[in-house]
Image 1 (cartoon, one colour):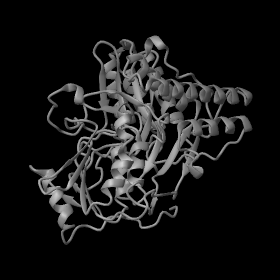
Image 2 (spheres, one colour; image 1 turned 180 degrees about the vertical axis):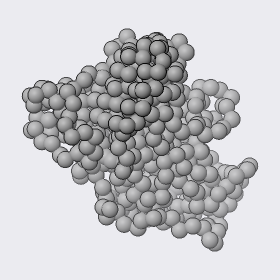
Image 3 (tube, rainbow, N blue to C red; image 1 turned 90 degrees about the vertical axis):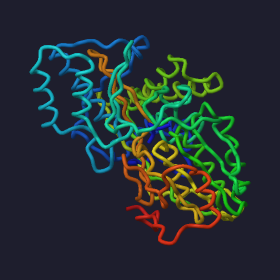
Length: 464
């Protein structure tokens, strides 16, 4: 589902970041050893005293309230703190607005005696807006509100609202316990009806593998993807239908791509924020998912373990800050130019057509970032959603108004440089209209048409 993860790079360090547990252990070890990698983003010269951004259990979906202008200005400053200390942001952009922009927002808040939570959420969205498909503002309560910077893709409503996908908290899950997902919402393009994974054939007998989600809730079905890939890669032609796949746990997507080839592929560049605020925000997101009952019973132990690791990390970093006088810097852990090697017995033998639309987002787009590097793969359909750059969502609730912020603490970048946030990946061949699967199957049989664009602004994984 969409909303995980284009900017930073945590320590993939020889697969050290392949699970959240590994990353948490590395971060805890770093805290214990008092090591401090130089941050890639330095929002302020001197770190401010630590604040607690942990949401009380009773407030995870609590009612918002109208606040005075003075209270709204204090909440504005807490939002600024959350962005400076936790938001990965887009490469080349400051994670928080400029002091001048914040001063203008404070002046606007002073101009009225009272602010309703929906009004304050809209003002904050305008002040902190960035071209980030996952960034959201709003509130919980009896009439929840969710405001995004990017409009949701247009799509017909599903016959069954339960088919609307959940939005992932990241597009970069590196393991079953590595990333959690946000609660279901109906703002994104719904996935097409059917099971999470389904293998059928076109009228011409071309295998068609529909992958409708990468949600951890569908783990039993998604675990079979490498086996499907091993079978498909030997076929003369096949179609992978990713329409409506709004993402989830990237581990499943990566395993599928690596099972198609034996070639080395450029991994996505990553940058992860390591800070007390980021750990507390991720924990808030996981606790709300658990509190809402959105976690399937089979996935609950994973979520509980993930939450415990986050809270241990936040505690260790807070303790380290106390030892240093009450302040702790934000550190961005960065990986660029890494390679991941395909796990197949040989190269892709046939021709693969990946069918996408505006519903393909987050982990779905991260799959394309790998698959597009495999010789014999063609991407057809429409532009993808453009919600991959900033993921692993953290949730914050401003204490006076109850307005919530949802922002990504891990950033990603397409290694070939073709992805643009909010625009997505452009297809090699554009398809519109009806019978898309049959047309994709026919294209897989006959090959790419002449004049199909040569993809890739880069041809090397070397660091830029």
